[in-house]
Length: 437
Picture 1 (tube, rainbow, N blue to C red):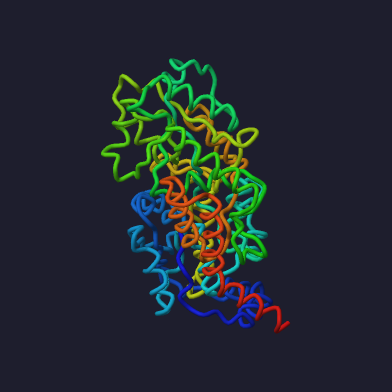
Picture 2: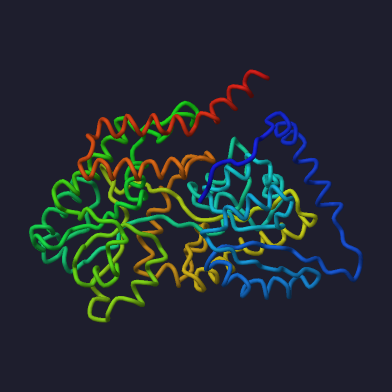
């Protein structure tokens, strides 16, 4: 989640703030005591389902910290980004918030967030080595830590075990070659009116998750230019296009699928790249007769199961907060493995800490195994505020190639040019900062 930077950033002021950040933070934590008898009220912004369930956890937090009360405001996903920017411009940000990890670079660039490394270094609760590396890395911008992962998600493959078996595929495909064989076998088995895989043309995530499995980065030159003509991205792009050209996947958007769960049940497609939120949906929405016929598997990579983009949200402390000490107590509480497990039970979000996955409830979950495996190799998306705009250009470009309107060479060349235009301001800022040193 992110959007374009809508405010200019004074680079030198931010650099100066960074040099004294640790000292200021220490003073803040020491000097924010409250008069006896007063109760600190923390304003917390959450998004979607997470905002609905977190009050269950906060009841225990407030019992442990009777001098603190947490008011949670739930923001809809569609309006959350604009709300954050408006609040920043009006000096009305909350104390703490759930921030999508692709929005974090923007808030960091605006100077809205408190760097957290000094607090993490002093914490007995938050242990960086216990977190999956990819999700922790999403919070590190220009070498500085600005958030603590609250939950992580990654997209992998939901599939029909019974249809694979009927098509003669005895084991899960582990690399692209095996996957191509399986896709061809399923297509031959199900016939012309059904397909092997659903790759909605209005979603950029399937292609980008394939692409990050390659070693070539999606952006180059200090994340200031597109790298979509690189050999790695081209290999992923060709694999993606091949699924459509060989009729393994329908040329359809998600809006053309009336009900994805019904179509999965009916065998309209057998592979579906999606995230952990759909585990609960599949359990609830698929009829009993197919409940034993589906499973999850890591996303096959070029040579073996590879990485995928590390999604999710983190907890951040805004500089405008007058209660940083209490906010940090709240972040530590929500980051404890016991609370992460409760959070998973409440809404299905995946814990970002490895130790939480040792709990029998997760360790024995057959649908969670693939997520646990893939999280070890999950990677952050490019950490630039413009990333979601670029991702939308990837979606538009791939659809043109799928529908045959333009050749892959033309599409990728144009995609790099459009990306370079989006990143023009970033190049200018970096050049200015380097020139002023």
